[in-house]
Image (spheres, rainbow, N blue to C red):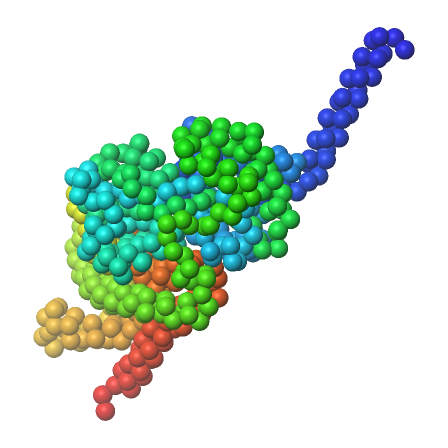
Length: 502
């Protein structure tokens, strides 16, 4: 065979090998991994220059896992607090988004070895940096963190021991915003999050004292032990050859804590989920009955918040809704146009957006307390819907009755208050009751403003317990206990008013 023939044979063989390799890789199912890019930096976030592409050190670790398995990584967007449940359901193979190693996760999931060690640290306003050094210095003051985290459990314990007030947020950006605005007095979060936020904004100081030490892990379904073991081998290799160090240095999170962690992991030494905080009494380490008894008072308090917030908001919504409906029926053309525009604006935009605008968007002009913003947001939203009910009820009264009342010499105000409004209220009662029950459920949305209502407290309970079964049943029972009596009362009133006076 000529030299040219030999070269051509080699080229064909290499091409065939590459093609076979690509075909084999494409035949493998993708490695689905779950994360939350909303406020997820530096774990998982949208690339600012290419918003359709994800970046972050957990993104790179997921790609490392996929390469080791000969598979293609496929991202599944799941809210942070739902990642554990989605992994159990099989929505993804692996969950990674700054997920903390906790007793609950060890008890209910297959968890990887820890690949990053972080410190729980306090952040305070610059003016308080010299006066606050520990949680004991925050008695009677508000301390923010993420719900369902180690930091939140620490704050719950500190609430009993030191009398501080923990506030639960759903992202790691707004706690620091509220700290600078003066809505909270301190933030307890991972040093990774605190230091990154400090580089982006000023006005607060990250204290050097360590409150507790935790670790980031990957989570898999309980039956996925073999895959977890394979990923652990990949992590060990990445620790030995410096791959993890390069990734963390790229994201400016490498520090002297990591070599110590890697030495322990590679030596086979056990690493507790949390260091410096006793987790022996956590919900995951005691019986579910004991955990339920412990959380019941919190669920009852959250139920009280839900019912009070809903009653006050509905009362205000009724008042404002009546005013809007009356203005649209009796007002002049400019008033009608303005009120119609308000109704369409409120009905055409999500209530979550309205809550964010009230609480965060207007913060530069007026700093509403969280409960006041929640009450006002729900009331103004439902007032738009209530106004449509009242307007249609007012217009449903027969014109003949109104003309008869005017013939008898009643003024327009008397016609409204004595003839039209009472009958319209009867017509509106049933849909009003439906709206009140709907508001009871929509009140769960105000947790984004740090109001700890029933659904948010249930979510925290479920995360700490590692299961949604018991918390979900209790939450549903409490909502039914609040809504069924209201529905029964409305039906009774309808029956009485339908019969009329005897």
